[in-house]
Length: 452
Image 1: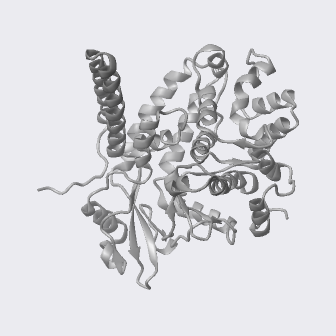
Image 2: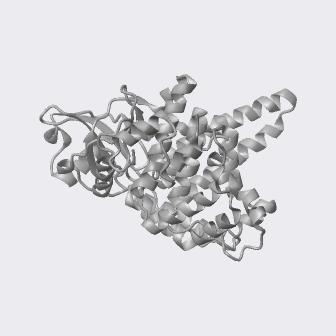
Image 3: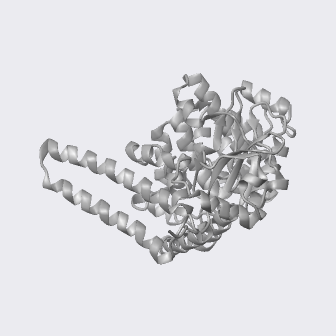
């Protein structure tokens, strides 16, 4: 029997037809529920939801690439995606169907000229994590050091290029109905960001930047990269011991609040102190270590903002802190979130758009599924007054993945029901105020660039 040569298959047409077939199966199942009545119809629709969720997860997992990455984003949309679908999609965070081991050997032969067992003292054939672009194996270096080895799926680049072509077409169609939406930078950001994740040498360099910035930090841990062993399609890094993020859901509320604050500080501290951000906030990338710190283990989707861009973000935040809506509107126009000629009053814009910043508009806020859902709903409305405002909104160049991290974090923190003084925490970064929490003081004492 001929050995498979790729882990991800399908040209653009084939990868377009699979989602279409999924939609057809879903429609047929839904139509079938009308053949029942009363309590039997209710039971049939519950079965419809379960089978559809399983079908969506299976299709996305098998397709991998950009389609699976979209499923990972959906898995964070607490309050927007039904619970049954969330349960299924959450499996995509670290448990996609793995590729055959002969394909792993092929990648090693191409990158190193030898199979894994010749490079490592020990290499586990079965991966312990499989995601949208590659899968991760445990291994041991010749000196006995345990490592995690990420191996890219053969064929994933071509699959992602086909997926992005389809997505780009859909975005361009959507732009024709939204006066403020400039499709070109969105498509460019998506292409540069997702295709950039395919270069593991690039990812290793970003991971080293983050490791350098957070070296010695009290509760943020970035694993070491073994650059001498890393290749464009194989990344070798320190094997971090820790519990998966899902373990946090079983902890008491104070512990969940602490973990939520760590993730929040990592995300926004990276932006406002280092002009960096990691745009892949799904739980499979977080590990809870025994010393109370959180390890952040994936750096494929990273961007660096210019000083001017970060200053633009800060202008918007300062206006919100000062409750100056006129300055807020000037700020969001300057960064390109809304067109300057949008035919709405400032109060109309604020009434619709303030949900994006809701967690920092009050002294203390608990993230809930309802809040996360409203943040997403307001920003994706296509009908009614909100839809008319959104027609004049845009996603500025460089902000596609920033939007993704905002929505992703909102869903993740909602799962934790995390509560903290988010407003005061952001104030530490943009105003230089004294730390607002115990973690803030710990961060100030152990950060290389934080004021004490």
